[in-house]
Image 1 (cartoon, protein in one colour):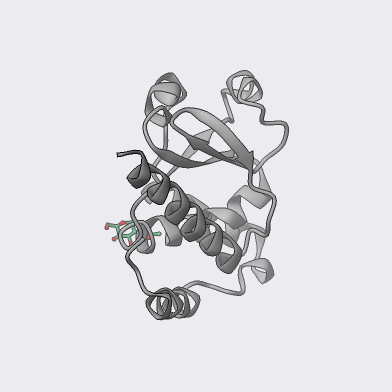
Image 2 (tube, helix red, strand yellow):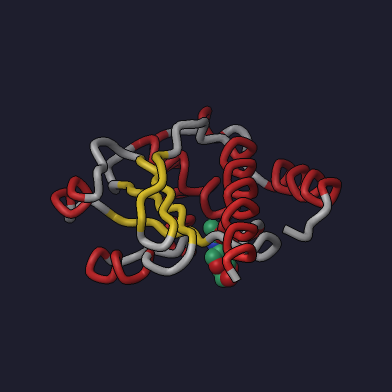
Length: 157
Ligand SMILES: *[C@@H]1O[C@H](CO)[C@@H](O)[C@H](O)[C@H]1NC(C)=O
């Protein structure tokens, strides 16, 4: 990755300032509203084209269900990273799968709870994300993986 560390740090502070940090302290209906708004701009991957979509490049995939509270908390953070980070760091893509009516499909992908985040590279499942769902943890993960897989691809050329 050709980005300088100070640049990434300043990007992170901008993100922190512009994201609601109080999301845990809001009412259930407010949370649902925020999540629904975020979902409108999140990139969704329909299950019918899932395999085909993730077969190319590095993908972080968010498996969620509409009834799941922790998915609602994650959606605005996820959207912030999708919108503000993916432009700045190339080498990784993000997509969400709605498992609400596709539980069987998601189980076949190894999902046994919501939300589950999987990292895929060229269609192969690399790992399940097991760190915090806060902006900083997810941001650090996305930037680190983007950098790693972009470097790997460059070395392959
Ligand atoms: C979704 O995108 C529209 C159009 O770019 C924008 O006006 C709106 O604020 C966005 N919503 C959220 C929750 O980011």
